Length: 405
Image (cartoon, rainbow, N blue to C red; front, side):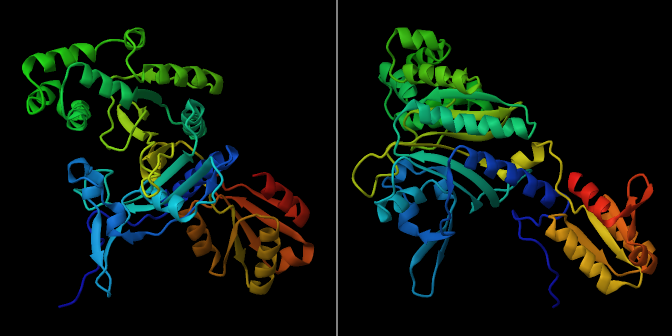
């Protein structure tokens, strides 16, 4: 039986021009991270299974349970990373001399063995930015400032919704409802399954009067919770004030829960229309778990796939195709001159018609013809691939023009 190659379900091949757009978007993201003083790190794709597991099966999140599991030749239980955040606890434990606050970012592939769908893959490129070792709300604001800055540069419309886990816990505790984590997980589903279904699901954890009171409380504005001294409300107000200094606005959303159990303070989602494109928050009890102490941390994460799909940005393309007219060595030499000037180019030694067709197929905007006459006269014909217009330029003028493009 002859094998017919195919891509594994939930994985994807990414080709031009999409791959070029992703590269351009990633460059903007990294530049913004670095502009705020964050440094890149890299972590292993595979870790020991024990690192990924939570201490309690009751609090294990869907993302954790969807991890890929495997064994090596030595019989050791391993897993493929499903996100980056859990690896920070190991990183801090093994590198105790890291100066705090540690401001890091990471971009790379993560994997989840979960159902696939439109824009939902089992491998995706995740972008994380975090501050470790700073308890202040200023760090929360800085994380959102980076995110809003890069979304503006990518011309993506967005709004920032904020809630606080302390506030959610205070609301639930005020009604004497037990199993707060389970209740929060149900509230987190309200946009997906609707209010009526959430109320039905909550009957497992609360009686009818408690559920009615809970939904009434959730309709109150932030001032109500602050005036009545609900824990966490003041942290949202502080975040709002720092947001003004950075130039971004937040919107209080009492229903925002974010199902992951490790959040401890402010939580946030950034949305484009109704779709979440970034999410994160404060998780002060996770990073220090192997050191038996709390280490404050806050961060945000977003998928490169989703951000790239929504970005309106000029794609980084090869600027020019050098077409040899029986002058292959001279064409190579000229190409090297252009590359020394950081002018991206390709060489082509086919017949002119095929060479132009190739340049057009990859969206290369210009072509230069290099023949015997061009070399002897030291003037080169530059063709605009879109308009078809041609101009004869000296080497110096040609390089100057291409640098400006």
